[in-house]
Image 1: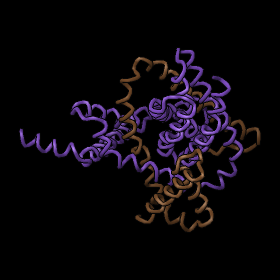
Image 2: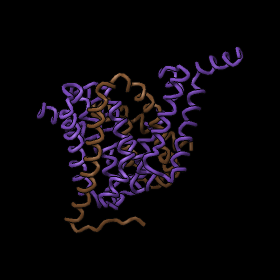
Image 3: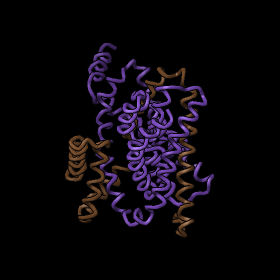
Length: 238
Length: 120
């Protein structure tokens, strides 16, 4: 027993344990997703998040300790964003051909996201910095943090809202777009990337390469739109 | 493989430097992505060399969001009293935004007389 405690205290201090556990939690999430016949509700990110949080609670591990290991995975978000250049290049002719509907969908999707989030939040009794924290929630997190700070929101809350938005988008997009009878993977992916950034894009890549490529573009364009428009929007409505 | 990752990291680094020196309102990786896309359009050779690595890497994009997601679950306790209105705002606006964006894409194409790309 003492031996086990010693090993535990040794491992729980280093990054190896939580890095490994993060990878396996994701593999379990992916396994559940595949077993379910790729049902969008069985989202691998959501499952791994829940599993890992439960494990941290059970073992009384702080998030800071967990993140020392998990940061290596988290760090890869940067190069992965850069790698989105590849599907953009592969689909360049189709991207150019679809520039007009994409820009229209960007402006409509991005604006609807900001206005409806604030309107619903207001109707449900949210005020002040809580409402402001909602404004950039569809943008990828580094942009959303900066915008939230600039407009007087709470950046930490915004990070949480951004991630939850991504998971919601990843879960609802397929059934929603099927119900609306939208079949074109360019429009499906693009709208998902605009509304649900990288997590929506990850979901789109699970469905179809075209959807993933266009989702990546939607994410980048909405990051730019949010950075430019959110301050104006706040100036107009607050 | 090492060269491919070196290229992604290198472009992220250049993106970070440019974003800061020009005080762009964009994250370094996004600037790096735009620059790499420009390079690939000029030098398709490089694109063909790295496309396998990039596709494999991006097929597990979901994994990379897990650590931040765990942080959110930890944070939820602190906002539990405003959880319901926040959840309503997030679910409502995300559904509306996806629907509005995808419908706009479809109708703009229809108005322009461009046919849908139907999946194979």
